[in-house]
Length: 367
Image (cartoon, rainbow, N blue to C red):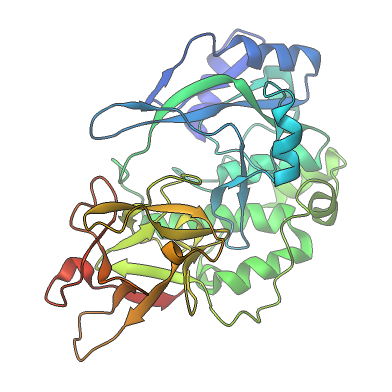
């Protein structure tokens, strides 16, 4: 955050564009962003973020029917627009997509508006939570966030951070996220602490300056944000019979990798904060919100996909426990195929069940 603000201070153009270093901009990507800001200085706009394979550098186009969201653990996730929204957008696929949250690494903003809004929270460290904070701040203080389908930028989604976090990445993420929650979420922050109780023990520093900024800008309460921007985020009932948690193999966890429907999940270092690693094993499915782990074929060795849950036979799984101390097997309900990580560099596959293989052993734990 501090590096970005230094960059903003050095910039001389009227519009700031923030980009991660590991990106490749597509053709004519900038003009659609600038046009939206020229029409309204309070718009903060993002391109569609395509995927560049970390292993092969192949360029993979992302869906234009996604927006950014989060759960009460306050971890960013991509989510599909509703069927009604997708049908409406089909009439004009160039229309901007209102998004409750931005990923944070790639966006454009009017420079004067960036300063008016209070830049970044300079007491946040390294990485994590800053996209949450700026998204709340933009919406609650009179602006808007949009994804612009005519703008595309490719992004390498790395498997791990190439830098270290003082005190560990979990503590840094929790500190930053707590700062955002304490300033912007009012009484609704209690749902965050219920979802991530360990965060309560992480000091978040002094937030007086950010609270004063909120008052100065006459920002709306978080209840307004929930009702007008993100009504899909429901207040938890905490009555689920299938609590969400990690599906892990050693230090690695089943992770959506930020991808959407039809994509391959993967393994990523466990961070115990939910988000893309927030899975539940019901009596018949392995679920991440509206997505279910799905067989792409009845033939062993084929990749497992994330598709919208629809009670399909290809989405039926069972947890198999035995006397082993090395975890459970996740077996398909009808076929002798089990979730396997042997080809995890490309994604998970369904392989012929073999209880002696560690790549088919999984530990399930609630967060």
